Image (cartoon, rainbow over all chains, first blue to last red; front, side, top):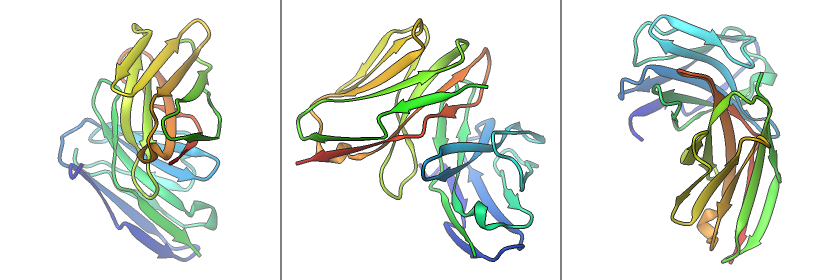
Length: 111
Length: 113
């Protein structure tokens, strides 16, 4: 499981600030994903990437920006954080067989 | 898009009993159905999966069954133990090549000693 890491693990910020959550993998998996997890909603896909420089929207992309300049990194940026973005964020990786493996998560609180 | 419904939302059993969690999906093109276990404060972890060319798959005390006609699949845990207590998520994905997962909202399983 050390193959996928997220930082920071905990973050408190204020409304309107920009926040970047980092995801790094050592497996060289092609696919990377960002999910948010909220009580009553399960896991919802924010953005995903099939390869470097290829990204696509998921179910709940509004208010988020992603980039993938290198295969191993997939940062998620909240350009102007809102209280509704308080959540636990999970990064995941996968290969072509649809299996996905999750990172340890980042708990974000927006005050 | 795909919609995955999961029931029940909570399930309490006594140690040694069996537990069954059921999911239905909407898109008949879906062909991959994984189950994840998430312990409190931890990441979701893949515990078993099934693909549409198989009707049942077992791994020790856990099994998954798939009914493509009815568009539902189930997780069965036998001889439950307290360490089985967790939130379980089902998911579905479709298509040839890679496709994203759509998750159910989860089932909290509580196993009492």
